[in-house]
Image 1 (tube, one colour):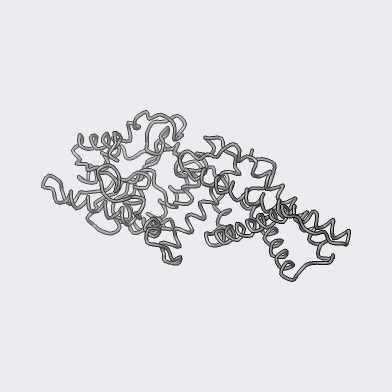
Image 2 (image 1 turned 60 degrees about the horizontal axis):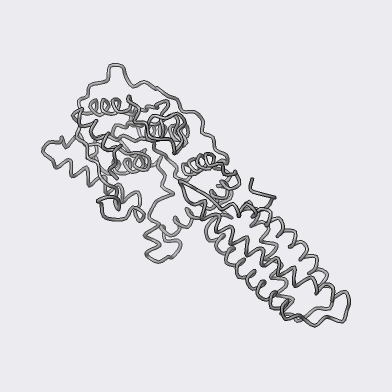
Length: 427
């Protein structure tokens, strides 16, 4: 929304003789619509509508209307600029070229600040893989879905921002804070510079401000929770001077100094890790597994509990009797424990899905230990089934049921490993 920080920017531009229009994002403040059901192309439409509004005013030069965007806005404005020459210039602040990589970087900094273990961060990243994959499939039509779901999946996670920037012919000012904890600085600056160079656009200015955060506010640490201390003073003057230069063609005498530097961004888990896991971590594969496991273990828990309550006639063979005495309670225990693990995994991913304050109840710290116990019980179950297989057995239907249950129990082990649910504790 049009908050104090945007008003400060607009007033600074106005004091320098540059008209500035700020507006509420769709679905925020006084604007209608719903930003959660909008894609980047929709947001670019909104920006271009504002361009046309300004171009129609008598007190604005229609040939000198440009776009300014912060964070996601820095990804919206090149889309708008690439569509029409009516946009005279673009100012991208804290922009990124890869949404998934940017969110992994942002998430890593949030988890580090909150003290969450790396295993939880990896789990949150894998959950994000599923969400992004499902969203892309629904939006592209590869996965049929109700209209309400389709509308909520309009955001283009797979949009190649480098391709978009290669279509921008207008003058570009790219601004970053050296202590940005939202986007990986070095990777995005390198990618943006390469894209602009490939476009043939020679009017490209890059400024990095030391001791500046994502929004180019003054900072000591760059952390998201640090109190606001105002904009870096040079930032406001540099932007307005650059715009006036574009309008008047008068070059700045001292040029545009590179005040900061783009250090390498620390990523606990590289992007290649998740690229290799997409075949297993995509939405359909994980959804099918989850449903099959829930059904199999729910049936096993209910059937096993009923058998234990009712009791069963012992087989006259002593060895078979001993196996039967243990087989049902172990199978029931595996089913109940695995259902608890699935429930805990859902609760954990929902808690970690909060982008700003990811959390999980302390009671869920037992999940990796419970996963290890599940593997031990599964191995015991397989041994008992092997012994039972050699002993006089029941009907063909029961034998098939035991085999299917054993397959589900075995398949659950790599599932636990994938979701970091094997070990002694999260920490």
